[in-house]
Length: 550
Image (cartoon, rainbow, N blue to C red):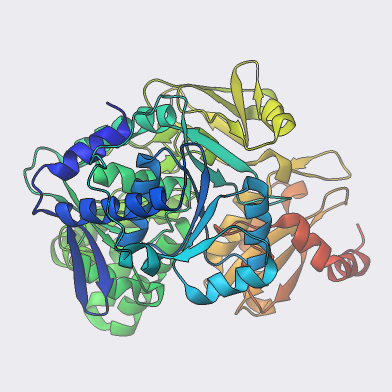
């Protein structure tokens, strides 16, 4: 059985069990397994009536919802290749992707977005709103409930990469890729949850058009889970409290904000509670450095008994772990949540690796590392410590881009473009992207990400930090957000003190407006478009070097 067969089999079991929920204000809108199956059948009948056939491409453009899930499963069940796109991307970028993959149909969840795309591409394929699909009276009683037969080599999705330095590329993932990956994620969740007959309670806010987010969705559909979908990112904490999850998938920026929010609330509360927290936190981080004292151990025991359980409960009374991926997580943030008794389990991978290469074991993980490689794949270091991977999870290729495919897949290995290291226990650490390396005029190579992340940690009001210095004598920084020159200088002084001379940042520029996908300086999944940023701020950066010559 492939992954789709497994999901459809589970949906037919316990048909009255809730499997999906949407948060709507203070309420949860639930879908039972039978409800989801009925929606899938309605969508499949619509697709057949529309004339779509196996191997056609269909764009799926909408926010996370029960209907999005039904459409995704319906398309794959009919052998149609799903092209999920991000609703926050500019219409012109969406149209460029659509022209690249030549879809036979576009399914859109928002009328305004549909109209914006039509203005950009009047000759585009037929477009239907989600409402039209599920309002359809089209029926096909002969339609089997099970998916159509698919081979391991059949593509199921084309997920477009973020395009940090150029045009986004479509990553083709197959039935075999996904069928290999889901048992691995199920295994890790089994280890986390242990033996239990009650469903996992899972909260989810990351868009399904991203590979890791989509794999979590398919994993939840393949096990005894109730997946609650966020519908309002501005009310995320209220939604989490309503969902009461055992675990949920995160990006580092959310965990940084959650940590900052906890610390700020305790500061505002003041008194004995704030004092206990401060002393326990100081003792905890000293302990991680191998420095312990009787007084510190006492503060930690008191906080662990009286304070930390309350903080955990304020996030979710059932919380067993936080899962984090997509970008490097600061070790200090991971340790912070460990102090509270909340494991933060890291995952590393790329869209081209069906989202995952490494996963932390719930009971054996090392802060600052992203875990060992998943069973059944191989990883090694290549030139410039580039991470190379091979296994059944490696993508089929980039859509209609044979040259780029050949560059990425060489000698049987996928070249990730990530610089990393591996320790004696087989745990991996990600340093940064090789293409982001800054080569100074002195010949020194600098990975910007570790320095940028440390500065962000020390600047709570900052949205982004970007380093420059390629071909220059020293490094400079651009900081966005609500920060002052004094704040930035103090942060630089702390960071520079721990760095060799060539890694020190000598000058900086502040730009109050954060980078966003809308202003063209972030990718759809929040990564820096470094080339676009350098071009946009070329004059200001040049002025920094003129004012502070080497």
